[in-house]
Image (cartoon, chains in turn orange, cyan):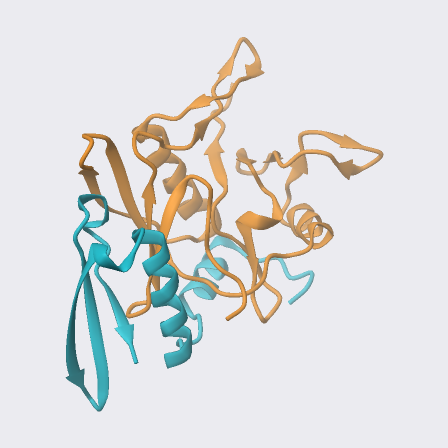
Length: 160
Length: 75
């Protein structure tokens, strides 16, 4: 089988019966958040709510179907959020192809040198979608050549 | 399709129209699930049943952290 769905912030379990994957957050960890303070984007650990809002943005902007399945306490009393999303199979795209795809989708890199993106963070002004961690490992290229995000950070930036 | 710009709805259709998995692919999935959920096989209780000519082995994890991970093994 080529390609696999995986991420650093989850344990990923594939359900072969209905072709969805279950994703468990690591104990008391809910990914990253990038709030803007004083005009600057800063990094901090996300809250469970920020994590779930992020998934909702991915559903809306990228046609994903992430669902909240369960919130559980593990044996140590730590919170783990369990979600599911459709499994998708293929290969990780080449970085050059991913960048072309992002430009075609209307995104612009937040940093670039001589037109070449030097960041994994991109913004689409049309619907004010900001994405982080948009690297090859978080995308799948299907046999048909479609490039589909599977595990990116997305948020909708409110109008100033 | 290189160069084809997909809308969110078209991306949704790509996700929902993935080809069905073969038996061999499902077995690979089981093995990956097993690795993700457990340190060793003693963490699981196994049961075997027969369905439609296929032997189906279900594995129930003992560890609390893996309670939701009831997965199927197809042989």
